[in-house]
Length: 440
Image 1 (tube, rainbow, N blue to C red):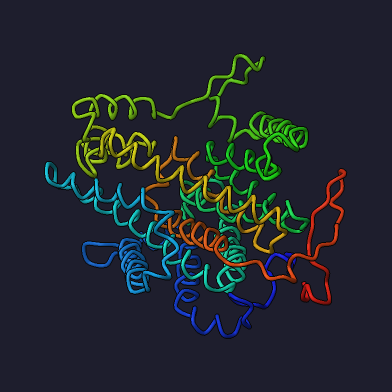
Image 2 (cartoon, one colour):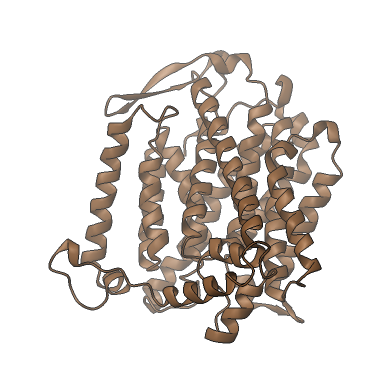
C-alpha cells in the first residue's frame, strides 16, 4: 500500500510523532488488540469459559476498557461527545426499558456489543484528535487483519470444499466488508495493489455464498468513486455501477452454488423470471413483526425477538437488525438508534469531504470509515451485524479514528500539492515526496 496514506511524522500541533505516541500508547494497544482479535471472527465463540464463551468475555472486556479510557479522560479534551450523544440517548432508552421488561440473556449480549461500539468510537476519536499516531496505525492494522481470516478461509475452502465449517461462512463476509472498505478507499487514491486485495476479498465473499454481503461488496466499488459534491463524477460512478452490476449478474448465473443459493435449482431463461430466494427469512420477519405490534411504541424488551424466534423456530436472530431493534425497543428506540447512526454517517461524510478537499493524508481513512459504516447499515437488512462484536468493535475504532482527524489542525506543509494522474482523466492531490511535504 502507498505510504502516502499514513501521513507525515508529526503529532498534534506540529510536535514530533514520538511525543504524541508516548501519550497515546494506551489507545494504540487497545486499537491493536481490538482489530486483530476481531480478525479471529467467530472462532472465540467456540471456546467455552464457564457459562460464557471467550467471545462473550472479549465483548465485555472491550466495553469496560473503552468506557474506562473514555471516562477517565479530561472533559476539556472530549471531542467525541458531540458525535455520539444520540447513541447515548438510545442506550439510556435501553436502560429505561428494563423497568417494564428485564432483558433476556441475548438482549444483554447485544447491549454489551453496542456499548463497546459507542465506547470505542469515543475513545478512538479523542485519541485521534490529539495525535496522528492512531490514523497512521489503523490502516496497517486493518490491512493485516484481512490476511488472517481471508487466508485461512481460502485454505479451508481449497482443503475441505465449500461446506467447510472451520471459518464461518456466515460471519466472515460481514467482517470482510470492513477491510474491503479500506482497500477500496486506498484504491480510490491511487493504489493498484489495494484493488488487487479488494478483488480477492470480493471473491472470498462470493465463495461464502453470503448474498447480501456480496451485493454490498460490489456496491462499495461504485460508492468508492463518489465525489464530495454528489453532482460531480456521476458518469464515473455510473460506469462502475454498471460494471459491478454486470459482474454480479454473471457471478450469479455462472457460479452454480451461488446461483442455487440466490434463485434456486432452475435456470431462468429471462432476467424478469428471476425470483430471489429468501431462505425462510420472510417467516421470521412476519413472526417478529406480528409480535412487535403487541407493543409498538416502547417495544417488548431487550432480547425479546431472539426469545420469540428461539421458541418458534429454534433460531436466535431475526436476520434483520432493524426489525430486531424495532421489536425490542419499539418505535422510540428505532428513531433514537437511526438518528444516532445517521448522524455518525453524516459526520463521517463531512470529515471526508474536508480531508479530500485539503489533500489530507487521512482522506483514505475517512472515506473507508464512511464506506464501512454504509456497508454495515446495508447488510443489517438481512443479517445480524448489530449483534457481532467482531464487526462492531473494529467499525467503532475506524469511525472514531476518522472523526478525530477533523479536529486536528492541518500542518502548513500539508497544503503543498502536486497532481498525480490516476488514469481515465482523473488526478489526485498529494504532497511532494521530498522537501517540506515530508517523505511520503
